[in-house]
Length: 140
Image (cartoon, rainbow, N blue to C red):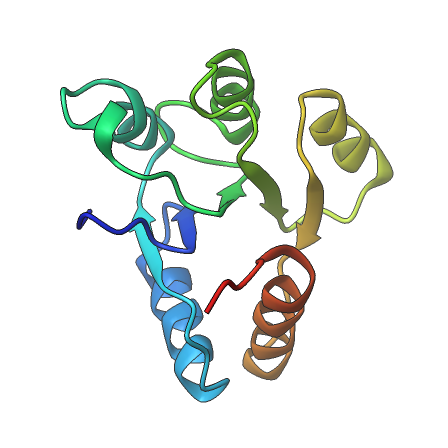
């Protein structure tokens, strides 16, 4: 992570999803920056477990996959909310499930929102644009 935080921290175990999101940002001509971490424990290590973490700016938004290796999304979310440094960061759970129970569980754990994985690339571009419009506050 550079001295400037990314707008979005994507925590997802799929390099294909990460590439798709990056490409969608390009096609949308977005100025949003994104960093990717591929598992829950690595994300927590990056945010909490090094001397630089406290001095590193936090992202505006964390897009968190529900199903991750090592620590699943709800466990990561619980730890983000328990830590004073990350308690106020906007976290959207990102999942393939559209079940009301999954959404309710994410909200109980402190998610700010819940986004279903889109079916195709066009829908991915629209979802990224919607996240940008609704959740990211641009100051430039």
